Image 1 (cartoon, rainbow, N blue to C red):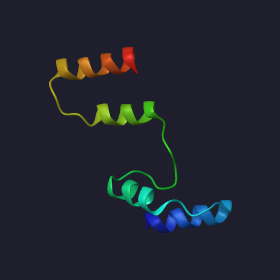
Image 2: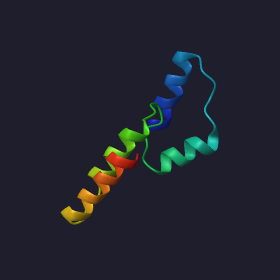
Image 3: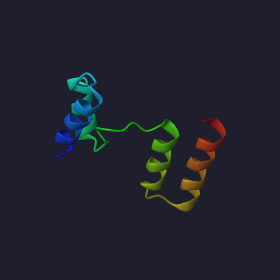
Image 4: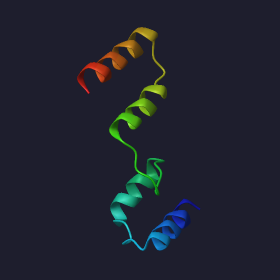
Length: 68
């Protein structure tokens, strides 16, 4: 279904078919095939998915905020 959505989006926008390897990588990792996210959005998702102690999460959040 996700690949069908990708092909429909490409066809509607009259874009080139995306790179096969990149599409395969994004599909396997569960990423959206039709939209792109920024590094900041990805880091927010990554941090939300972490299951660690609060001090570890606070450290991660601090590093992201200060250094990235």
